[in-house]
Length: 312
DNA sequence: AATTATAGCAACCGCCTGAGC
DNA sequence: TGCTCAGGCGGTTGCTATAAT
Image 1 (cartoon, helix red, strand yellow):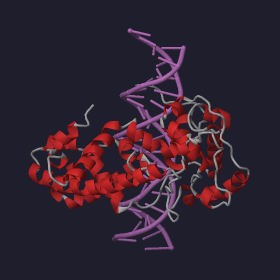
Image 2 (cartoon, protein in one colour):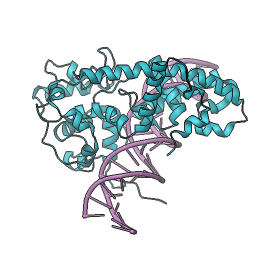
Image 3 (cartoon, chains in turn blue, brown, cyan):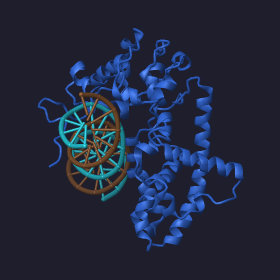
Image 4 (tube, chains in turn purple, green, orange):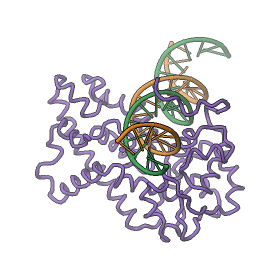
């Protein structure tokens, strides 16, 4: 049986979100910040369960989300992180700041699995199976599989190196990173009416509410990084909102902004929620970069060994 | 033009974890 | 120390758009 679903209450709406609901949710979060999701339906009047609200925010409404096609680099990164981490989509997503775990998961299931299958017709589904799971298939052309993966990991290292150096540059500059290229589709591009409806809302400059002690907000160490005046002075992107209005969203100075905190979340996640992967991969990368290509690194590890590094 | 098959993705479900009491 | 519950996560479902017949 297990635990009853949190949303068994009668009158809880399911299914696709309407633009109006989106606006209500965004407005509420703009004022109160994400977190304390249980209070969201009560305080907004949304007939949605708290989980649904959180999911809608994190997967769709949250600023800084890039939608649309994945780049080659992102694709490679996902493939190789998946090989290293398995189906830990949240951890993988922490290396792709503009993508949500759901997006990455969907992309993996719909595109990359097939792609890898094509590349390795003999390997069946094991091509997309995490390293630790693949370890159970030693009998299936193990040598060939590992050789290919080693080659792929080399490519991934390059991609990861590029990605990380970009991240580092972003962090160093601390001026608001343009997380979304100007021509990148935003969440609102698929729901233009949301941005239209939000225009009015944006005309009255939103304020960052005084900080409540929501647990989830408190959990985010990114709050520290993001609450300084440097970031507060910066403008953030709110999907189409900030680009479609002359008055960009501007957090109140000295008040940490939840929107920006969310943007920083990935940085903190790399250091907190998934520290071993980042530190390990970073060390691995930078060691390798500093050593040249010599030495014994992950590439030379048997895949099963590499995956064990991430075992709990 | 109508029907069927397939792909893509948003959202849901249920389990797990950890904070608070 | 054990219990409760909110939030997080990964797997899965189901709806919609598009392609193929």
